[in-house]
Structure formats: structure tokens, C-alpha cells
Amino acid sequence: MPKLMTGFVRAAGYANKTRKVLFAITRGKITPEEVVRASAELNQYLFKKFQELNVKKEDVVRIEANFEIKDGKIVWDYDSLKIEIYKREEEERLSEAMKEVEESERALELVIDELSKLSEKLRGLSEEISQLVEKLKQEHTALKLEFEREA
Image (cartoon, rainbow, N blue to C red; front, side):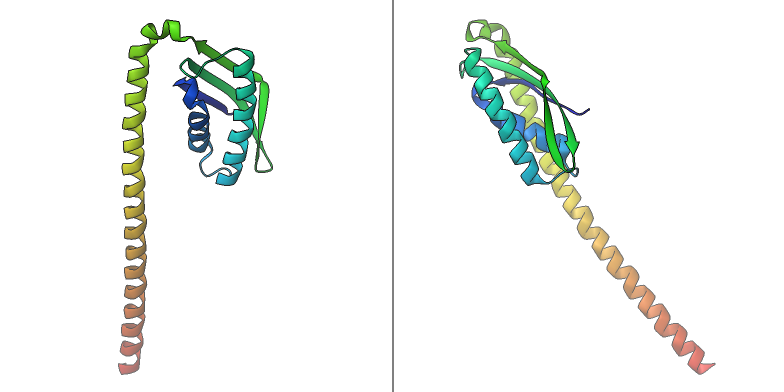
């Protein structure tokens, strides 16, 4: 069963983080529209939980939730939901860890952007190679026909 794991994130940014993580772990498996729908569903549930647990925007949370993909839809296993909460008062201990996490996320996003650009370049090169192969096939066929006519 796949699992969404956000890592440490400020409570104010949990919705964006869950959506990004869900996009990353389901890429190529379901439609982007379904990712948006499912992340919105989870985020609504989390918002209610955060209110019950008196989580403030400046608190730090870590969220884990199992899910299944059935008929192209994400189905959350809310019984598996784990929410770790670190209150602002404890923030000094987490401050350094959060800085590292945020720096790692920025670095990861840069690498992902670079890989996406490289992937596009490779697609373009692949298309050019395919076109050259087709051109060579056509030229070879034309030469073969010309040779057969002369013989």
C-alpha cells in the first residue's frame, strides 16, 4: 500500500506539501486532476484534525497516510493517518532541522527542474534520431530500387 509522508513542514504549508508529495509519488499512475481532488480531500480532513488538536500555523507537523489506487482513484486509509505535532514552544529544537529540510527541498526542486529539462531535450533528440532513421530507410529503399532497375 503506498504511503504519503510529508516530512517536517510548518502547519501553514501542509496543504501545499501534501499535494506536492502526492504528485511525486503517483506520477504516471493517475491523472493530475485525481491528485488534486485526492489531496484536497485529505487536506480538508487534516484541517479538521488540526482544529481538534489545536495546531497553530507556526507549529511544525509531519504527516503520514496510507492510500490505495482503485479504478484510477485515490482512496485514503484514514485509520493509518499519523500526525506528529511540534509546538512553537519546541521550535528552537526544530529550527535547525527545518532550515535543513527547507534547503533540501529547494535543492530537490532544482534537481527535478534540471531533470525535467534534460528529459525534454532527450525526447527532442530521440525524435531527431527517429527522423534520421526514417530518412535513411527511404534513401536506402530508393537506392535499392535504382540498383534493381539498372540491373
